[in-house]
Image (cartoon, rainbow, N blue to C red; front, side):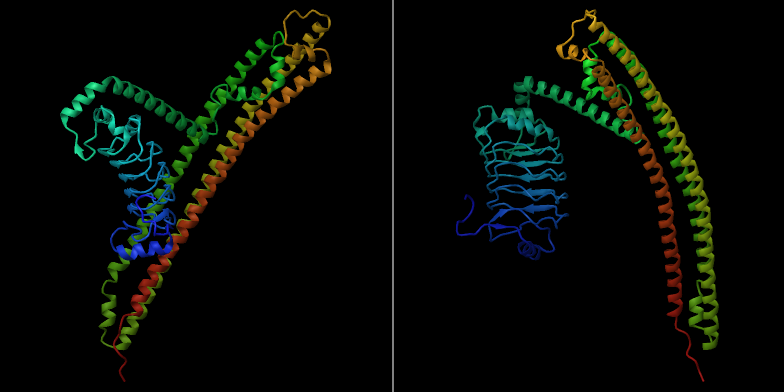
Length: 507
């Protein structure tokens, strides 16, 4: 065990050790979790979610682990340990300074999420290939790198290779990278770096395209039409239909299938475009509702603030007047009057809130009616278009059955000239077999069409229920909070009144 005294017993980070570290370092940030004990395993750090600095150097840690919760970590020191693999850093997206100096690492990897990395020390490890440096090109903020003490440093062109591949590097192995070194490095290795830049640009373009496609797919999902823009649904009908694959060898089936595909895809695209427009209509309806709601609530809140402001302006000196009243009886009379005013204010504010409840109830009911109409219209139109798909499938089935039986009859008369696979010729010997095959294929297609229809309709049902429930729950929560606010305000006024001292009663 390097870096440690064999007389020490290895430990796992435990609650006692953490408590000790906190007590020793308080109120400073936690940096050294253990001093007199060698740590073998990292654990029990979940409670330090907001930790920004962590120092675990000079231990016998063999694996980077249990750091998932330290999402705010900026500085991490794991130098002088026995780590062999870079791992377990995926969630440390804010990390800027990482030291893995003096470990047993042979490859720089698994650091893709550390895009904020600025300082990286991985000297005195087992890095042998200069290609490890290429991996570091992804860290656009990296300005300080230490690789000294690795076998790759013995390469003749080591420094020039590193500087050429990391053109933004300021410090390498504790030395400032000079402009001269940078110019020579770029000149010597431009043929490699130019190729890398081209490949990286292509990879970036592909990534952006993939992200755009994913974003578009997510949008299609919100409209319930994912994979309806094209032949996806049609292709899915045949994806697992082995019977249809055999029937496709029969003469005339290919032309029939192409015509079916064209008409089916046309219906799907009509459905796709319709659903997208309906999605926009639904979004607009919800947006209009909440805009109207906001206007009504704003007007009500302004009225409530006006009522309270008027009350406070009219009663600024009431408590002082009660306190300095000429007599106990006068003070009690004034207190009773003020108490009545407070109760009247409470009634006024609660009446205003009840008016708000009634007004919003009507708005929500109208919104629910509009949503119900949108959902009903959508459902009926989707059913109609999916019925068109089923009708196309039924017609295709009838024609396919005719072609199949005709092929059977020709086969029996030995008039079928086409060369067919042996397994296809086998089922042409029996009418029941071929009819069953066609019917089985037909059932598979109808089932898939119905399943896709059910998915769309179920999503619409869920959306309708969700927006209605949200609108209603928001109003319940708003009303509850508003009533609490009114009660709290009245209670505060009442408490101020009750705590106001009045002249003592004289005999």
